[in-house]
Image 1 (cartoon, one colour):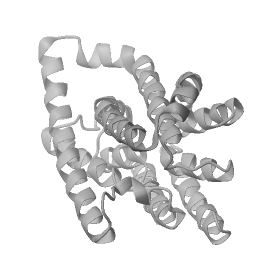
Image 2 (cartoon, rainbow, N blue to C red):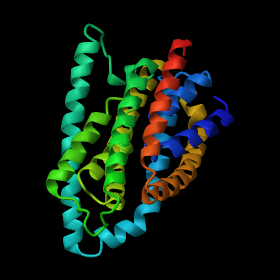
Image 3 (tube, rainbow, N blue to C red):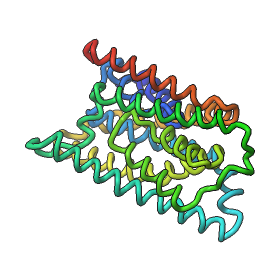
Image 4 (cartoon, helix red, strand yellow):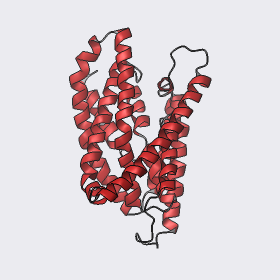
Length: 289
C-alpha cells in the first residue's frame, strides 16, 4: 500500500465521513478503483485510524458549541447526557438485531461470517445510497416549505425525538451507503428540530458511537493478525497514522462546508448527490468492480 493511496483514502474518508453522503460507500469505491482489498487486515487497520481522525475533527469543530450548549450547567449536561444515552441505546439494540438477522440469513451455513463481509459489495451499497438520498430530499423539501418558520419556533430535542433519531442511526449501522449523518440530521429536521441542533446532536452521537465501532474493528484486526500474521500490519502502521491526520484536516473542511449548506437551505442537494452516486456505483458494479 503506497503512501499516496493512503493519503487519497484519508481525504476521501475525512471529507465524506462528516458529510451526509456515506463515507463508507466512497471509501469502498475508492479502494476498489485503487486496486485494494477492502476486507484485508491492513485496510481494516487503516479504516480504524481514519475513523479515529474524523472523530477528533468532530470534537474540535463542535467543542465551543457543545461547551456553551451542553456544559454551561450541570442541568444542561444531564439533559444532553440522557438524550445521548437514549439515542445510543436505540442504536445499539436496533443495529445489533438487524446485523444478527442478516448474518443468520445471508450467511446461513457459512462459518465465522460477519456483516463486514457484505460491505465491499457495490450491489448493496447503491440502493443504500439511494435510500439515503430520498430521505435527505424529503427533509430538504419539508425545510423549504417551512422556511418561513423561525429558529425560535423550531423544537429542541426531547426524549422521544432522541429515541427516533437513535433508531434511524441503528438502521444505518449494517448498511454501507446509508449515510449516518444524512439520516440522523434529516430525521431531526423532519421532527421539527432546529437544523443547528440536529447537526450538533448527530455528531455528538457520532463521537459516542465511534469508540465501540473502532473497538469492534480492532478486535477483528487482532483476530486476523492471529490467523494470518502481523508482519504486513506492522509495516503499514505508521502510514495509517498519516492517513488519520489527513482525515482529521479533511474532516474539519467538510464540517465547515456542511454547516454553511445547512444554514443556506441547500440540504436537498446532498440528496441529489446521493442519488447520482447510487447510479454511478451501480454502473461500477456492472463494470466488474
